[in-house]
Image 1 (cartoon, rainbow, N blue to C red):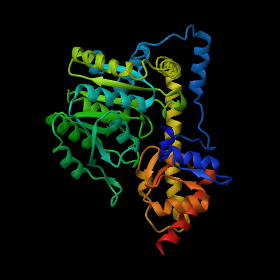
Image 2: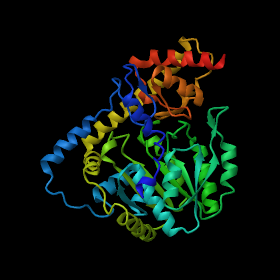
Image 3: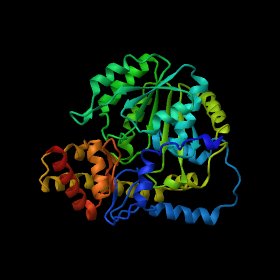
Image 4: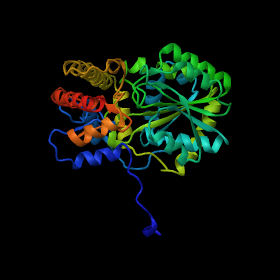
Length: 401
């Protein structure tokens, strides 16, 4: 049977990393894969993560299984980070959280939960969205459709078209929203837009599924949760898939969570029982180490303060690179307007570069970006900025006449 198989196409993003690794050019730059890089071009281990691991190594007494939905300490810490410790959702026990292997694992559990409990539901994703979104939902047997989101002409949200589309989504369907740092565009809804979208979705009986992978990378940990909390303010049922890959740097530990928010504590527990079924038939129970790191940091006041400072440092470095990128392009005489990149948030930006220009950057300069023009701003450093902007200037001249 296997001899009849043809090779599957490589992942559009992770495949870039493999090509990048094999490129012998010492000046190569990877702006494709979504991992944070520091000023030296490395993906660091946070100082607080090392401290937490030292404590865990000294105190750990077993490698036994976690419960199906993970550690209670992790669940509590996740809910308090999402909503605030004193939020009515937390104190009223209207939320239930399942620890998952990364944000992607949380999304897949959500997809299986939707397929099992919401027959006929279609999942609506933004145009564009993270390339893995459609695949995750389709793998669970769900239909996927898109709603307007990004306006290439303004490099902003196509909000009126988005709202018009939301008003047409049938009741019982699912709407995927990016909590902050929209991937791939870097363009987020304003607070008033969040409130308007949340009200429409609640009125229509559409269930929001918020992909919240970058808390702390836009404006701050509290500010970035505003959209999640506004959506939860409608009192309806909500799913939230969050990730600790970025804000804790725990990429290879695969730490995430799926949180269900319901109208009552009883409804939340009923939904949680179906989430557990989805987990049990998938990976059975979550890996422990990464979640233990998150719990140790978030549940210790001193470690949490230090971690919050590290998140601030990462966010500020990304924003500094955005501004330096725009300034350096201007210094290189680039006439095309890239000022919008400084206004976007998070690691990613829709650069406006065409597929032809992206290919030329790769072939001539060993600069790797996604074919859509999405770039990872965190892959930029002060050391590679001049080379990067000179290459882009040259490619623009060559392709624009």
